[in-house]
Structures are given as structure tokens and as C-alpha cells.
Length: 364
Image 1 (cartoon, rainbow, N blue to C red):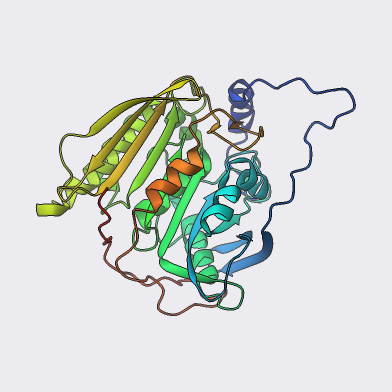
Image 2: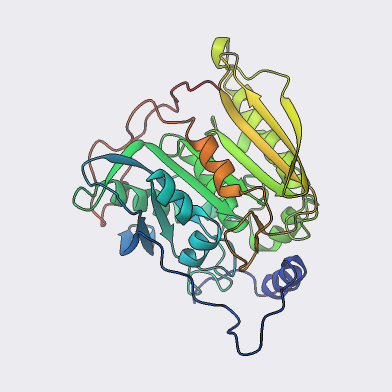
């Protein structure tokens, strides 16, 4: 039987999600409920990955003006529950950002036969490790994309992961399990790493009622992370972001980082107002002045992507623009070594090669 998670969780998630959507705007009579998206200037290429841990369809967005002679960054963009990958890429503003900045978007599809609500399975222990489950599938998928030479060329030192809700939780898992692959991660409205280990504990993790997972479960140094979370999120409560901050800082403490690589004990905090919405932005730096952790706490934001290009499922058009915040952070980080020295075929189970989790310095 196909495992799609506990059945009791689905109606609860739907009930919470219904309260989290931004209020719908009135539309003139005769208009369709969801108008078609204007065609972006670039184009989508559909692909499929198959590996020892499973298969996924995915789409690669090639921005307008892309040259196959130049190596470009990649953003692995992970949609949330009840979302579709290409819609999310368009509505979140990442397609517009790709056209402006010239990077690839890789948008995997989590379909209903993978999980009934199209959620990434962040809440199950078999999908929280490096060499198994969805993290292994996504790492293999990135390896496949990085092996392309005809239509595009990937800068393997600049591979990033970003996602919303369940997609954000999976981006955080990749930042934890694959810091040699992911140069930085953008985590929007998500839970801490291993805050649940089975489906029945997911809701407790989302509401931040479960105890904080042990820092020992991290097992190493996490990649740099930028967090975005709303204070009024009724689905994934705001304390989850504080837990991720604690978890990330603990991963650095566990490695006993010293000298210029140690993180300063005092963070830099600033209050901002964007689109009439108050935000608290906190940044953590190493002793050499490199920004390695950033957290945007947005007043009034519910369970929705901040600053989307257009209204959609769990998209709030009001800023700050999360895609721009994440890309600004990503531009500061790249791996010090290319991860893939050779491209594995789609049937190869392990397609990445282990490298120390080291990043080049790009001080603010």
C-alpha cells in the first residue's frame, strides 16, 4: 500500500490551512477564479530523475538570455503542501528574480501519489538523513541537473535550496544533511530539523508544543540559513523559527568553531517597515564579518509566502519580498570546492561526493 502519511492529519491540516490563507479579493463577474499566468520570458524544461531511493519529475526554468557557455547558480525551489511547483515558482517571485539575475530554478514535483497533500515528508525519520528518502532523491536530482552541459552549465559551488512550509522544512533538512551540496538555504514558515519523527507528531511540532529536539541530532555543521516567519502564522507557529536559530547556533558550537570562523555571541537587530508591515531583522556574523544566519520576523504575516508576485495558494503579495531577501543572502555564499567532480547517471544511487563543509568568505 502506498504510504501517504496518517489519514487523520490531512483534515486537520486542511482546517488550519483554510484559516491561514490571505482573504480573497472580489473579482468581476465572468472572470475565472485563477487567471492564467502571463508567459515568462524564459522557458521551462521538463525532466525526470530516477535513483535507488525513488523518482521525481521536475522542471528547470531557463531565464531569458541564458548562455550555455557560462556557469550559473541554481535554486532548488520546494513548494509547500497543496501547492504546485511551477505555480509556486511564478507566484513566489523566483521566476522574475531568475530573469533579472540569470540563475536556474529547479522545481521538483511532490505529487499526490507521493503524499496526499503534496507535502514533502519532513516529519518522518526515513526522510531526515543524508543517504535515504527524499533528501537522497533531491541530492541525486541536483547531481543530474549539474551534469547537464548542452542546455545549461551549473556553477556547482552555488547551489541553494529554498522552500515554504513543508518545502522550507525539507530545505532545512538539506542544509543539515548536505552542507557540502547546499551553499545556503532559505527557510520560510517551517519547523526545526527532526522536530517530528513520525506522522502523528507533525502537528505537535508545527504548533511548537513538542519538546525541542536534541542538538545532538544535527550531527555536524549546518549550511548558512536565512529564515522568514510571520508572527500570526496559525499553521506553523512563530516559535519554530526561534528553535531553528537555536539549532543552527548549536551546530556551530558543537563544531567548536574558533578564530575568525566563530559566530559572534551578539547579533545585529534592526526594525524595518516594508509595505506598511513591521519587520524585525536579526543577523549573525562570524568574527571575520561574514553573515551566516539571518532571521526576518514579520508582524501580521500568516501562513503565506511574503511578497509574492501575485495572489495564490499561501501567497501574500504584501512585502517584504521573500525571494529578494533570500537571493540577497544566497549571493554572499558559495562552497569553497565544487561538489560534483563527475556527473552520475539517473540510475546511480549515490551521486554526490563528500567534501568538508567550507564556504568562501564574502563579508558584508
